[in-house]
Length: 309
Image (tube, rainbow, N blue to C red; front, side, top):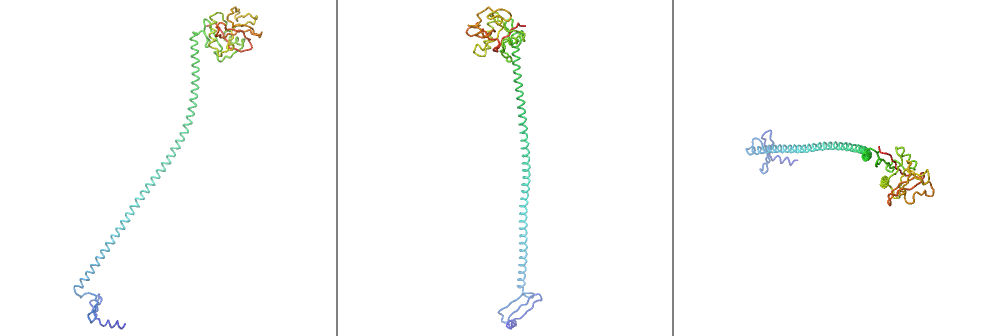
């Protein structure tokens, strides 16, 4: 501490102003520390002015740097805000699209449900229409059958000039009914066949000339259903129930022509009561077309005859 005091004693203190620091000089003139103030030379003032200007420049630079930093931060905030705004806009757009997509999906589901319901309803309507169409076709088939029947009746009437009933055949001045043609009529015994003819205003056929014999033979040829001649016979109005061996027509005319009987007929076949005449078609000889058979044991088709109207 003493040494410091001694060193300080070797310096002179000079005061410039009350506002400036002091400057000390040592007596030997080798070391000197000064704080310049008023009352010094112009170089000192220049130095002070330079320092002041430097401070001003530094202050301006600091202010400029601060402003630039603030602008940078503001720009960064602006860029960040723009990016955020764009992201929010895109998010809103995506949300809006998602809502529209959900609405479209819901609408598509509803449309699909409607289509399915319409499909089910359409299937029901198709089945109903099919049933209706089937009914129509059945009615059409029935009408066509009726039309065919009427056309046949018209043809028959035209062919007979209206002188014979439908399904009857006109030949010369007589109308003939072959039960084989009428599917509603079933084979019968000889007595039942005659009764059927009588209910129609006719009687079993009486063949009394060659032309009628030929007509009968040709008609049977067209109507025969099987090849066996014995199964294709038709009852005719000829019988020998009064006197065995004497064949009499139902109009009380005795048959004297023998050439129409088949070979070996009539034979009463073992005395089995073959008392009724049957007409068939014979390919070998169209004139030999008759044989005798039991009147009750077997049902056959028959031929009715009556005068034309």
